[in-house]
Image (cartoon, rainbow, N blue to C red; front, top):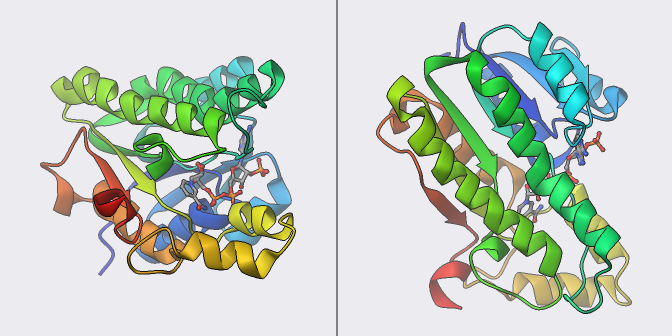
Length: 242
Ligand SMILES: NC(=O)c1ccc[n+]([C@@H]2O[C@H](COP(=O)([O-])OP(=O)(O)OC[C@H]3O[C@@H](n4cnc5c(N)ncnc54)[C@H](OP(=O)(O)O)[C@@H]3O)[C@@H](O)[C@H]2O)c1
C-alpha cells in the first residue's frame, strides 16, 4: 500500500533523528519528498533520490526565496529544532534568542511563506515537546519555545480550516536521537543520565524514532482527516502521571 503516492511533502530536520525517520518512512509509503536542513550531505544520506534543500529555517530571506520556487505541497513535517538546557536565570539573552529561533521562528517562517502553497485538504505536523506542556527543571528556553509551537499549531488550525488544511503538533518525551545522545554524552555519568531519563515515564524507557514517526504519519495521512488542532503527547505516559 502506497497511501502517499502522488503527494509532495516537505520535511525539515530531515538530516537526522525523527525528521530522517519520518522522511524514510514517507518515501516507503510513496511520497515525493523535499528534504530540508543545513547539512546537505546529511539530507543525501537520508534519501539520495529526494530533492535536497540546504536551508536555515530561521532565515526569513532564505525561506521566502525557497517559497518563490517551491511547487504546491500536500503536507509538511516541521521537525527541525535544537536543544540547549539551562534555567531562566542561567540562560543568556543570546541563548534564549537562539532557542526561540531554532524551535519557533523557523516553523513560523515556513508556515508564513509556504502556507499559500499548501493544497486544500493538506496536512501539517509540527514537532513540539512534552516539556512544552509541563515544566521540568533546567530546560527553560526550549520549553517556552515548544509551548509556542503548540499554540502555533492551534492558531494555524483556525486559519487554515476554510481550506480544509489540518495542523497538529506532536509532543514527544525523550527519544533516542542525536539530539538526546549528545546531551547524554555531555553528562558526567552518561549511563546514569540515561537511567534517570528513562525513569521519567511509566514505561521506563526512551522513545524510538519510528514510534514518533508512526504518529506523525498518521496525522499527515487521510486516516486522521477529522483530527486538527491537537497537541498529542507521545512520551511513555509521562504527561499523564507527572
Ligand atoms: N529527541 C527528543 O527527545 C525530542 C523530544 C521532544 C521533541 N523533539 C523535537 O523533535 C524534533 C527532532 O528532534 P531530533 O531529536 O530528531 O533532533 P536532531 O536529530 O538533532 O535533528 C534536528 C534537526 O534539526 C535541524 N536543524 C536544527 N537547527 C536548524 C536550523 N536553524 N535550520 C534548519 N534545520 C535545523 C538539524 O539539521 P542541520 O544541522 O542539518 O540543520 C537536525 O537535522 C526537534 O524539533 C526536537 O526539538 C525531540
